[in-house]
Amino acid sequence: MMLPVFKYDKKEMQMVSHLTRIRKNNMSRIIILVIILFPLIEIGQLIGLRNTTGENFHPAFASFLSGASQGHITQILLLWFLPIYFLLVVSDDSIMDYLTGYRNILISKVGKKKYLLEKMITSFLVGFGVMAIALTLNVIITSVVFQGGDSMRGMEEMTFDDNTLFHFGITHRYIMAIIFIFITSFYTGLVSLLGASMSLLFLNKKLAYPATFFIWFFFILQNKSIMLLFQPFAEYGISDLLGIFIASLLTFIIIPILVYIYEARYAED
Image (tube, rainbow, N blue to C red; front, side, top):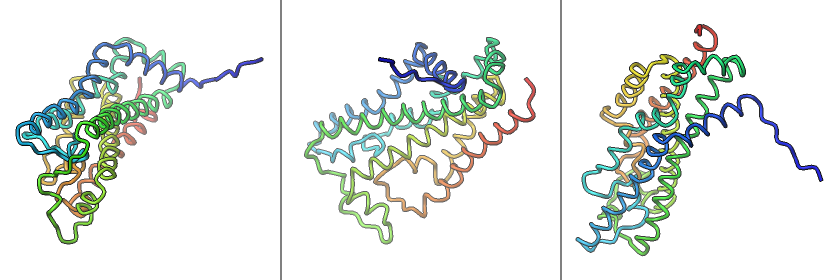
């Protein structure tokens, strides 16, 4: 009996090679482990808080993105520094190709456009996937550890006129947690894509890292920070989030498109 033979095009083979390098790279594996551990550390903090106060949180409210612990240190360490983590894991791969001379070999094999697309697509998928795994694992564990808990620190008793998002979250807590896991994972993918774009544009870590970090922090430091997009059960309504959502989304999509057009049509290797 003949077994089916799966054939990959050159771009898919390049992606497989890219993912294999990530899997075998000790630095990448350590950083991915750290990203997964941050939400788990949060669970430990909340268990300690429960033991101290006797307050048993609702599992969805105890999830990482809710920021139920005091100080929000783990959220700050993970979310504020997202560009650095994923530049090191996946997004600066094109810089390494350039420094080792592998870039020209790959471009000669697959073509410039496929080379650019692979770097961008892989960066987005790795960013999205790693964050989705970390946050989903966190919710699964909180659902077991805080089973039967119902406390949301009084938020369940609060009312905000015309704030349908808040009331939806209080009524459908697990659905709200899942929605924000997707949003956060999607934006993590976009940040990783942004890092890949800056790396492809500059081919220099001293330029790509600060450029990516500057754009990300620009949205963090706004009066209505991009961090609000990652917080379920907050008192902000859709109208409060719409401006930063549109501005950040357009920025993180338009910049990679412009970089791709420039690199594919005008840049010389």
